[in-house]
Image 1 (tube, rainbow, N blue to C red):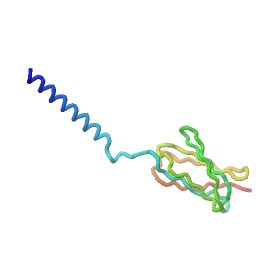
Image 2: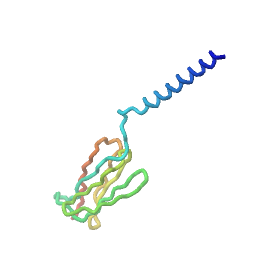
Image 3: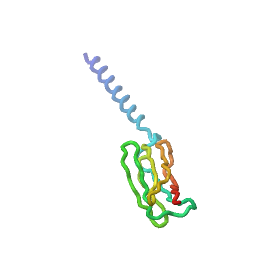
Image 4: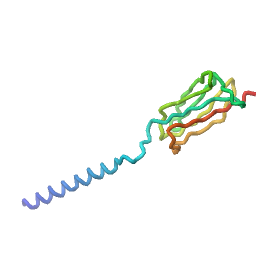
Length: 123
């Protein structure tokens, strides 16, 4: 009976070790952590590459359709920091009733910083 208990105890310990090592192996440090951390930035420009101050940039999270906005300054720059790298985004700008083309940023783009100029035809 003691041998049976010892065998059961040994099997239990081996199973526990296998589960533990399996969990540790699954949490390997070389896996990519796709969470928050991407910076999307750029400028809103007219056809002659002049900045368009006070243009509004719209950033849409394509997963939940949440929209963030940014009103550009005198130099035409915008920035959206700390974006989720596991999410696709669409971005466009508006200025005095005119709209730029819509551009996309894919979750499969592994850059931590993405620069996009948004051009608006003001003519």
